[in-house]
Image (cartoon, rainbow, N blue to C red; front, top):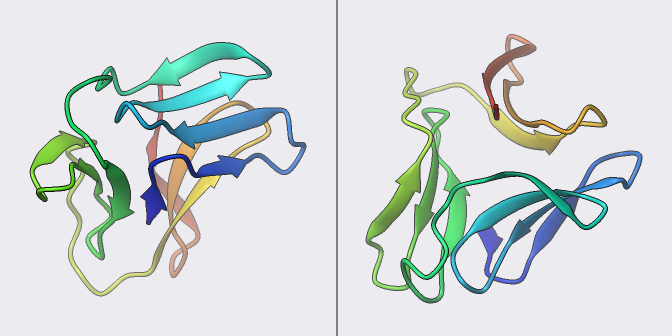
Length: 104
């Protein structure tokens, strides 16, 4: 889970995925926005969660869905969220070692 104000760094520490306090999930290259969910000001107390079916979902503090990557896979796999050195946010199926979703 990535709560408001928290962030993930790429291994090279150039890209930052930030769950902003305004509920927008933003990928920065240094201080330049390269990708975002366009969910700013759509809620308060938002957080990002990766579900056991591989979907990424942003919820507000009332557990309303603000955004989803609309990816659904069968339950039972282990997924991880990564920020790559290439500047993409990626969800991996770690059991099968494959990428199942990538930010555009």
